[in-house]
Image (cartoon, rainbow, N blue to C red; front, side):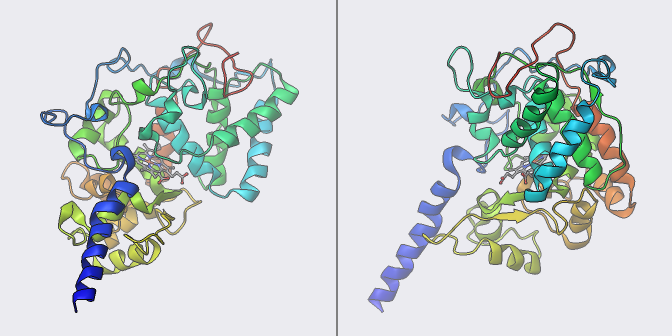
Length: 368
Ligand code: HEM
């Protein structure tokens, strides 16, 4: 009996003290304070800071154009398309990887491929090293491969930011959206700073809806556009540690999130198994059942099954401002597929460098 109690207490300690600290390193996935409620928190990473670019987001879509490389690299779009098709044979989630990469690039200063730099000229930490990108921001290697193909045929011509944009444009068509001619003309930044990422420019999966709305509106998007953009969670996956609290220990209640239905909790617990034990492997969980297809199943799951993984997604069906938008996207097949590319056009033109600004990097990981 005494032995059983010791084992029970040890398990509890491991489950609720050790594992959260392993599962949520440096606060990732943990609840961070609201901008207006930072009083007692000493973690600097929690504090929105002033940055030069925070308030000035310009949408430079008019400076971008179709066929931008028609003179300098007429096959640019095709080179990208062929390279991506090859990559998709071994990585069916390449489109998901790239979409997230561009979101994390564009929201930090602008769509200037700063997320891809491995070094900053000043030696400071670069964007990709910030914990706001999670442990696993994938896709940089995909851009490397595609850019290498472009460099073979058109050295020094196509920027890394356009390479990423063209790959996403092609990837969206391959993932089921209508085919479109991509806009080009972006140039690459010559610096990348983790401190700018952490200055309240990227969201955390534990944020309340108010912070999400504040961020997206500050970046120039309406609430409707925010919901449509988050619909990118139609593809790809999320690791268990990001939302484990919701299925095992919601708000320290040691019970699952009461808004999650039983079958959904069971489904997630089966994948995110062995929580609180050394056997826990933190696997990825697909957002929906068609993780390589850009469809509205992500929204249908929300409306018809109350199924969401991370907390920020769940807010979308719990807030009166976003519920009607989610319902519309779920109920009108084809609507999200039509709107998503439009809002992506807007996102992929945020604060772009054009003309003589920035440079065209030869390799995406370092400045020229
Ligand atoms: C409040 C807003 C958002 C939050 C908190 C958020 C957070 C996250 C997190 C934590 C992951 C999982 C990372 C992992 O475990 O590997 C993820 C995945 C992903 N996010 Fe978001 N995201 C948001 C909005 C967006 C937007 C606007 C886009 C694109 C336009 C996007 C695209 C993606 C994609 C495609 C994936 C899957 C990536 C993959 O499987 O490689 N997200 N997001």
